[in-house]
Length: 350
Image (cartoon, rainbow, N blue to C red; front, top):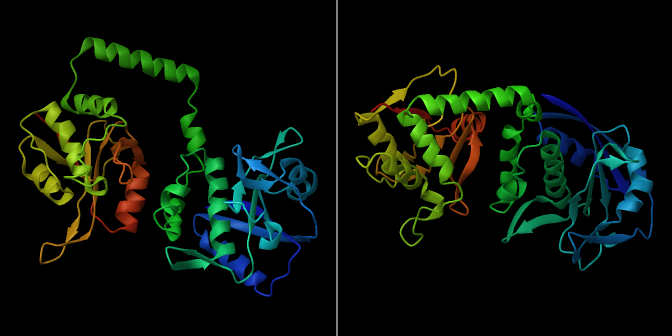
């Protein structure tokens, strides 16, 4: 479990519920991140704001003011989060939270966050209450900071836009060793590239290699006609479209339950049984939908194709595009552990 230090700066307010809200925030990140949270009170008035992202309606605390007054307080912390009362935040502003940089006096320092919230204010969207504004905005911005630390693709808005409380699904995917894993020595990468080139030149592709090649080439493709298959349930269709291009004996299939049944019975495929020490590019993974006795789906599944030993591609349930979106660990943690779906691996054998 990653241990981090967070400083929360309370500017110009005092809440009776402050300690309980801070403790609730700390517990929410467990067991993935163990925060030591310190708080400090300030009373800056007339804090200057400036536009963010080039939009005059997207305002945040002036970076110069933040660096001069708040950043020194958090110099020994991993993350600094300034909390202002709503009355101090510009009324016309469309956003009340930001993750800024982590540069202080020309060096890498604490990641700078800022939010505005009142003590009993509720976070409401679509006529539903998701929690206090402080709780939800703080989780949101701290997750941005954690993704900045890991170097992984930031999926906070992906989940928030579906439902604010779904940002909890970001937690299992956090990998604080991600940057180390990605930064292979240049010599090793050159050797791997050379070996791959020689292998391609000296032997024909296996079925799995050809499937992986097709999967990579289809990146950002929308396979489905949205009037026939909705993006959110088109994963099996996308996978079998690629498999059909590889081998036209393979039919186009519309559901993960049906895809799993086909792969498990087809003579063209065989199941790869656990324990699997290493995945291979071109292997197909299926987390089949769960159906009740009436044949109704009670939990939608997903399916994709591995394009390396750790990364897979599948259609994105939001925009319908075929892309890299789950690692092996993320598939296990989200579809297996969080959703309780079985996960099966298949490979093409003929």
